[in-house]
Length: 179
Length: 123
View: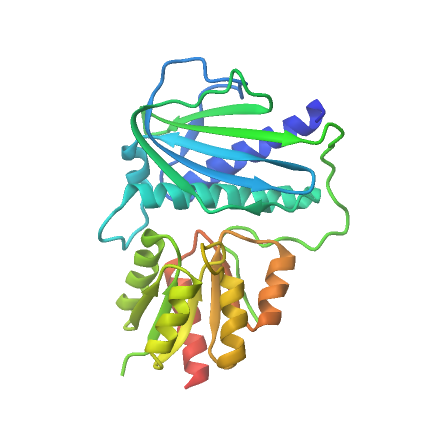
């Protein structure tokens, strides 16, 4: 994948993460440029993991954060909060945003159902893996609450992301259509 | 008498969110965690007036559920509530008999309004 395509993926991930947390009333801000590994010692308590594949690529999205962050994004009306379930759904909604935006480039992702990992010291780790990109954010309201998104992406060497012309527009988040 | 809505989503949190909005608006709600449970609930509750249904779920996904429902009760309105927005999927759901498509995150008042409209038209 060339550097322009990587830049496009970086923009799509940043837009998707920011848009998702904003939509749930807990805006996040990036704390670093995208990295190929997580070099610091920052630990999280929860990780949402979800796989995807398409004709041109396949990979995994991992969202690590704290329970406090997850609970801060809970929608109204949830009487018995279950943070692991909600992190799985957040991961699913994040990948949905990635999927909808990558569709503009002719990438049709198939998405797995999410898995959530719990542990006292979870860290994303990518130094020994090819195709890993780590995106670091923190809650805008609390610098001590991290949100880290790792995208492990294995693409065909000749993949170049180009916007597909004359494509039927995808429905964006919040859209309501009735037939 | 309150209309009964079946909410099918593999996220318990989303089911609670949707159920809360519908119950606040006066609907009865029953829930299912995937398409297979959704069919079981339909078999057990003939009073269901509409279905709110996710797409990506284990065992039986939402599109398979809609296709299965259409074969049995073609008039039961189904609204897809999903992270998916791709036009091909929307067309497939429409062809299978879905009456609406909402991309998460959703606004509870708009969801309630849609369900009111669909169940009123059915009454």
